[in-house]
Image (cartoon, rainbow, N blue to C red; front, side, top):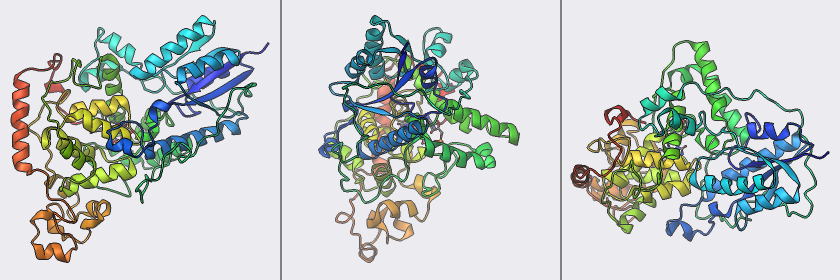
Length: 513
Ligand code: FAD
């Protein structure tokens, strides 16, 4: 008798350590590996960005398409293939339809913690169960099951990293399973299948872009990159964040595995397991929160809090978020977003975001602090949206969690500690190589003025072919004055006591994520 299973890929775009795939294969005569192109994430119109759309930008969609091509190729090597479906009007109804059309007995997909994913999956699961279809939905995007951690904490998410780590324990091992072949794909009848589209077919144009993200997507690239990282055992053992140069360009100071973890081309359990194997061979190594394992635990921490906090992605109605009267100023927001603040360190980071879709953690700190409590006093949700659209690793829980952190709205409350848009970058890169790369207009500015070009005498500006106010903007605010004003406003907002739950051991949370 036929027993058909669907394995529905969303994140988790991998073969290794994939419990949904493993379960789908068990006892099935056919499996249907499905990916549904979700229109919710696509917004190719270039004006989307200027309209403030947070939906995926060019670099992330390009990364996703790489992931799909790689997954399809791996499945084909195992005698299967990826079935790509059009997700109009929305993926849930598309999946419900194929469950019936393909006479499915088992539906397998990775558990999704995000509110949108939860609502979508509830709809599909209810439908499947009504038809008597078995649904298997394992937790495999994260090391731990956020619901379990919250349960252990008496039903509330732990609000400090330390309390999270104390509760979490040891994660399960990754599946050791490898495949020589998969059950064949069944008959798809008259369901219309798509080829994996190109970026142009999705309507995206290579707008205004001469430089693209140097990071290609897919499981093969993820594992290659992981192996490169693991080869340098000393580096892994001594990894210590926030130490590391945020301006290092061609050899970043961290792993750049975030986009692979985001799409699940790399299993976090497998990554964790590999790090532990290195630790065992080298003996002495750094520890959480600063070690590489510690970084993975930050990821878990934000996933857990995000899962257990209603309205986590907004200020209003979010119990852990300080209520701060942020300013509405579209002109300043656009200057920040477009890399036109007049502060070369800030602008170079924003251009790296636009071109590469990835920046070092401390670079993210700098621009997030500048936009919010440091200089411009603009709402963190606005900055979050820009990151959400442009990052290739854009991740709902982690992005929102870090914006809450950097704006001192939750988790971290030392609002008087502000990153200088001048001296912070200079500490790492006194010659301004990073700035010169992303802001070629400043490439001939002498070192002594590269972080404050408005202070260069006109004769120097002329010699450098960059007149401030004409070729490159003057600073949109005066940092010393703006940051003082921000501190005052933060103090006033804090005095009003705007959030409900931050008393959960404030002091313990004040280490740098
Ligand atoms: P590594 O230092 O090599 O760390 C390994 C992995 O640990 C990362 O890939 C990531 O999965 C995890 N990790 C590291 N730092 C953090 C952290 N602070 N919080 C949670 N997980 C962490 N990271 C994202 O993956 N997606 C986002 O959308 C995102 N938005 C951010 C927004 C802001 C304002 C800030 C300040 C940080 C944000 N981060 C985000 C966290 C962090 O900057 C990136 O995870 C990290 O820079 C990715 O580079 P990496 O893979 O080389 O990190």
